[in-house]
Image (cartoon, rainbow, N blue to C red; front, side, top):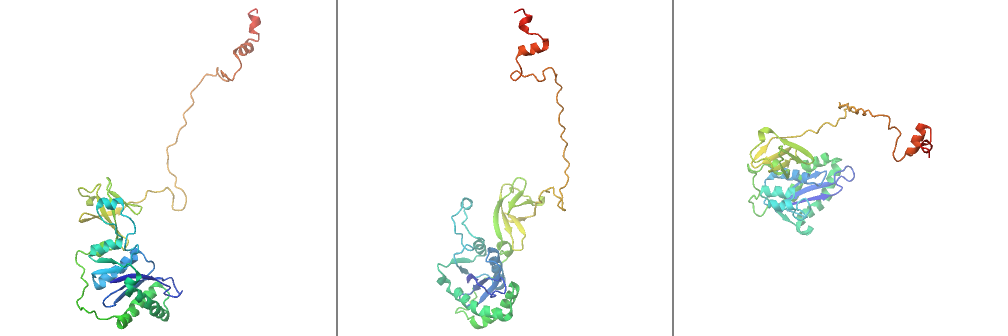
Amino acid sequence: MQWDTSEHDWLEGRGQTRYLIAMIDDATSQLTARFVPHDSTEENLRMLKGYLELRGRPLAFYTDKGGLFRVNRATNQDEELQGEPARTQIGRALDELGIEWIAAHSPQAKGRVERCFGTLQDRLVKGLRVAGACSLEEANAYLEGEFLGEWEDHFAVEARNPTEAHRRLGGEHDLAAILSQVERRVVTNDYTLRFEGQSYRIARQGIRAGLRGSRVRVEKRLDGTVAVKFRDHYLPVARCEAEPSGVATGGEKEKIDRPVRVKPKAKHTSLWMKNFHLRQGPPLWAVLKRESGKDPARREGR
């Protein structure tokens, strides 16, 4: 199977639909396609899920070397310690499904899907214009309801080998878990973990021996839910609520009772040293003169 995405003004300015993900069988030219708002990992995993449920598991997918399929960086320290190769989410999913990934070294190497896009940018654009499609939903309704059937009639051929190469999904293939964003996280001593800026707490009934300090598998699934797996078991988790910020819903700050700080009383001091400074005050003889009203030198008979 050849797998690629085409960016094009499919609705000729009538809407924002610009991306078409397509999977075409190299032997029969059978086409599976869908318009998506973004060429992202999540949208490609949704496309893969639909294909697997419709046709089963192919032997291999043939794609380009884009960042969705291959990690274009060196292996980091965490991956080296775990002994796991650096893989994208799609690469990991294909490996768990037992599907080989083959990288094309040039656009010519995946010429069938490139020629397919050339045909689609002519025929499909005209069909969408006649159908009056102006949104993503209308474009997909026409694509799946009419166009793919016409493609099957005009371009699909019989394979030279009639043996079906697609394999059925087995009980071990949990698509909800496999087609997820999967990360590894460490459980803290209070049985919590961090994922995408949020804290999650493991429920008491899910606590098991050896859980603290261990790595768990965190799955953010296509429906938006989060699942945590430790060894062979899924654990019940709940997102920790953020602590109140102290701001009322009406925009007014809530009054928070705080202990009143009492300023300690000053100690009572004698006034006889008031306004007396050793360095800044008058000399001692001047003070004595002011107190006695006489010159101390005359009083001593000098």
